[in-house]
Length: 123
Image 1 (cartoon, rainbow, N blue to C red):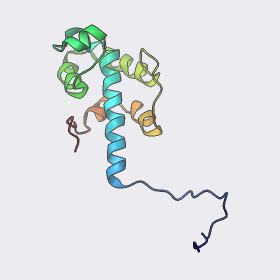
Image 2: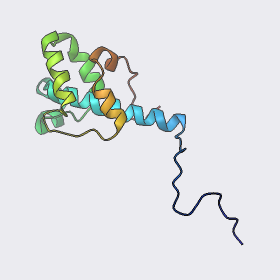
Image 3: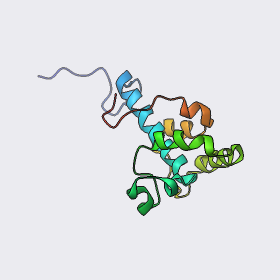
């Protein structure tokens, strides 16, 4: 006979926690999505060497590396304007997937670029 649980059948458990690895993976995904939004808002695909990016008019490659490479050439006023557009979900109005992504979109650009770049293989 199965052992009864101490909770009532309809009671929810609110003490769920994620592991450190799961939290880092979630943060990495949120940063990658935000980097991609910055690349789209700044229209970095126009000068990209990747044909896929130019054809689809959005970032399809390593968005963090592309953003870091092009950021010194972008004027400060345009960076601030891009930050406002990213907060407003970018040109395609992509809503944030998680609350963490919502918070990361509101970070200043220097803090966003300080996050370590992850490779396609992961950590």
